[in-house]
Image (cartoon, rainbow, N blue to C red; front, side, top):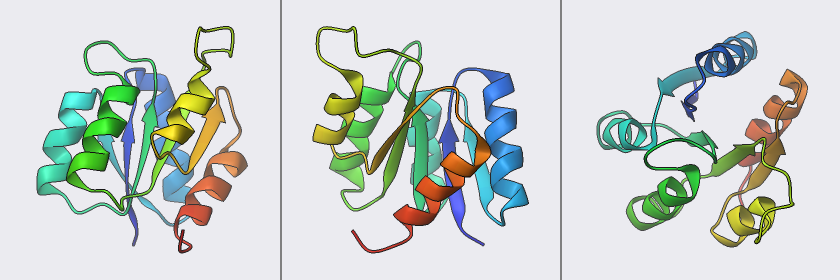
Length: 123
């Protein structure tokens, strides 16, 4: 079973993603912060990371940078509710930093599963 690390500071959204991944045959590993995600990456083998961008403490941007340093080939999917009205569009930034996909919150389970399935294919 493919382990997917899911990082989000909102409990209800974590539950939504966890249930969707489980129903589609994935094994979700849950972290509630970027720092917790890095600790898990050091101890739990995962094949894909799905992370929120906007989180307190270490945000998804910092987390993605650190993942690229420690695990350069690990596929990352970013999720964000932030619009592109920011100074530098979040979607563009996450792609530049190496995210394989950026999902706009809220999204349906099928969108998440399609992105996760795509990450299982060679880049």
